[in-house]
Image (cartoon, rainbow, N blue to C red; front, side):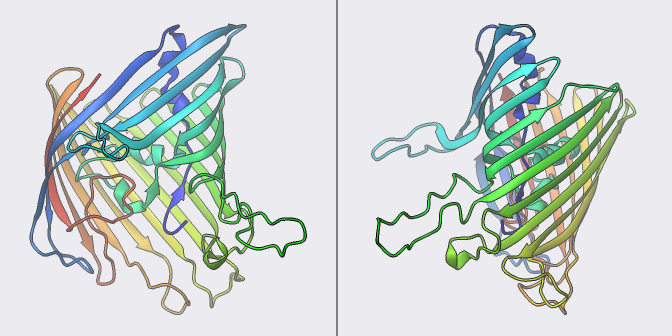
Length: 390
């Protein structure tokens, strides 16, 4: 699991507007712009400024298909398939070929939706924790200003199922989710013939099982989210040398809230992430592979066709030097300022700036990707781009 945890995801909530349609809806986004990064801080020592033209800086370019079928008695069959697009280069799909479609299956699922019993979906699903971070960060997990890049998110989970309750009590929703392997397809393992000595990788040894329970309250200007998740290896204590992940159980919990005052929308989030080492008893002498807290506050101000954005947050390594294990990551802060200008309801220009300040041992670098885990280039930068939704 490294420093990452898949939270699991329910794209079905965002697909709700498609439920009333009897035909397939085609939708998408094309995003392209300019990015410049550089600067030194803590463990990051760059050589010069890196400039580039890049796609998907504010949000990934994609094309999707969604729809539903009315099965009667308030029950509907639903589906959605969303594919990533490359807007700044060709993508080699096979030998001798190139195309605009990336290899990324952003998400895809099929399920059943009922006003009375809720929604059940299965497939490759967007992350619950990832969605909470992006929903409360004014930069929505993209561009140079986003804070979500600091947390090492894995944005989607394979082999997943989820249930989303109907709304109750004036705005509450509950999500239960499970993934058979947050790191990819389940490992098949090796199989021996009768009489042969068993060998190879045991089936499912490196699978990471995820369990999620989350609650949301949304009513008028108020929004609150609470998420609790665990990830553990299929076989307890499975080490990397035996086909395992090298990590034990991961526990993460997140709480976030926002209030829309009209002239300004204010958001805040606090998150804790703990992963112990596989195959060891948890004592004072054994270091956690991951043990950090992170938080941010964020605000957005609409003014005519403009939307001004700001975010400030910190990530703190809770491990101490007396524990045994990998080196301390260290602490860091990041702040971002940005502006969107809407040319229409579907087209906007964006300009954003972000800066990371590492302590002596930290090496977080700037990235426009929400799931970067602090891996990027430099510690400060800005971007300018154009995006169109269809």
